[in-house]
Length: 101
View 1 (cartoon, rainbow, N blue to C red):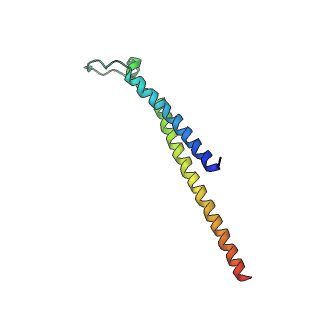
View 2: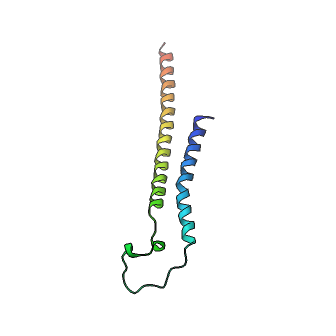
View 3: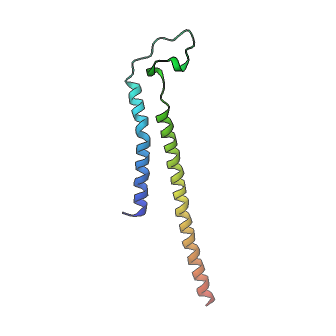
């Protein structure tokens, strides 16, 4: 397996693991009973029943995972382009030395 195949498989694995918590949260949200009628007064969030609170941790983890996957992909593309430029410079340098000889 080439290096590029390995990198793409790793990226796919990270994206899959990042999406899994989000989908489990949406499934759990669908299984909850419908909300009660609107309230007339303010109720602090810490006094709400657990089913009415939105768990932020899975969403935060998913957001950071996606951001890191994008940053890693961008750095990988820069690394590949830099390698290509270095090879081209080496070829040009070799051609210049051959013409001087």
